[in-house]
Structures are given as C-alpha cells and as structure tokens.
Length: 287
Image (tube, rainbow, N blue to C red; front, side):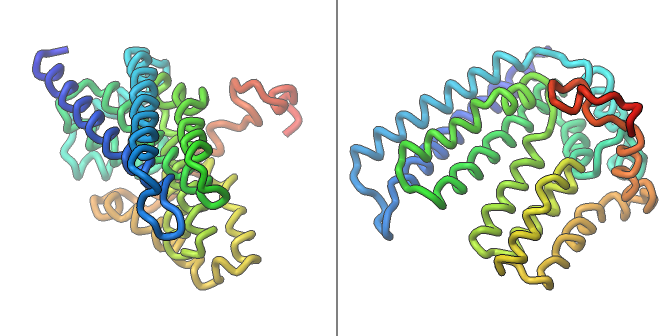
C-alpha cells in the first residue's frame, strides 16, 4: 500500500479512537441515568467509562487483526464490483446493473470506489461501524428491561464480541450487520411506540438485504399490540421507494432496480448454503 494510503488509514483509526472515547462516555452516562438524574456519581461514571473504553479498544484490536484476510467473496464479487464502479462516472455506476446486492449497499460501494484507500479496508471498516451501530441498538433494547450498568455494558459487548458478528464484518467483509442493526433499531422504536421511525428503519433494513424478511413479522405483533396502526404501514414502501430513487433518476431501469430480490431467490435455491444447520441435512431434491 502506498504511503498516502497508510496516512489515510492512520487518520481513520485515529477518528475511530476518538469516536470510541465519545461513545464510551455516552454508554456510561446513559447506563447511570435514573429517574431523570443525569449521573448517579462521578466515580461510577469514570469506572464505567474506563471499562467501556478498554472493551471498545479490545473489540477494535480484535477486528484489526482480521482486516488483512481476503475472503473468496471479496475476490470474486466485492472487489470486482468496486473496481467496475471506479472506472465509471457516478451516473453510469448508478444506472448500470452491477452485482446482485440491493441498491443501498451498492451506493456505499460507489462511495468507497471514490476513496483513495485500499478497498478491502474500507469495506471492512464500514461493516465494523455497522457492528457498533448494532451493539448500540442492543443496549437500547436491554435498557427497556433493566437500568443496571453492568447488564447494559454486558449486552453491548456481547453483541460486539459475538463470533457471528465480528467474523462477518472484519473477517469475511460481509454486510449482514448493517441490515440487522437497522432491524433492531426498528424493533426498539416499535417497542417505544414510535411507529413512523420504526417503519422507516425496517424499510432500510429490508432494502439492504432480503434476509430482513425473517424479522419483519414482528410488525404484526406491533399491529396487534397497538404500537403501530395500519396507516403507518405506508411508510415502509414509501421509504423503500425513496431509497431506490437515486438509481432510478440516474437511468437504471425499473426492473433492474426492483427485481434484484427476485433474481436472488432464483440464484440460490437452497435451504442452507454451507451453514452447519439442521436444514443442511435435507437434500435439495425435496423442494
């Protein structure tokens, strides 16, 4: 990697470290907030901030150790898509069908193609930031059932240290943490009876990956509970359409824009694809 790229990587890591300090302080403060009081005391705040900082530092180090691994998916797909976008204008990249991911992630790859830093690092950093966004959603959900600082921090770092989370982002350079994070935030705001924001976040989650469909049945629960009214359901397709607008305005066809998920279901007709689950025991001949 060039000297310029090295400097840019160092700047990114410095910004991440500064963000970690801010987030750790926010985590500590929110975990000690009770009945309208801002802080219970200064010493517990410092203790929890120190624990959060150490934890975030270890989580960052764990992920950085995995950054140089180049996965087959990155070689065959992500790097190729990004390089293709780099050779195009922004309008051409938006209008041309590239890859089989939906538009929001392709927007992010297009942005990465304009950054003079190693693509692999940028893609993995994006997924690592999604891990953090996901963990913040977990701590907010945990906060609905407890205000004990220890439990809240355990929930936060439980999310960050789950092997399925950090391997997906920092090792395989995958983006599953992005759609899961938006889905969990949609769940949180649904439980808080914020229906419009909840529907928008669920739509963003679904726009990133089709797998979000397995989380969306929770909307039925919210309808039954009264957290969401039928009129709020309109915000889901509206938000989804707005997300697709840049591609449509750039000249991408309607079928290429909205047919990605249809193509995906035909491309992978398997109950399980190399996953150690019960469904891998069932031969594909049965369906």
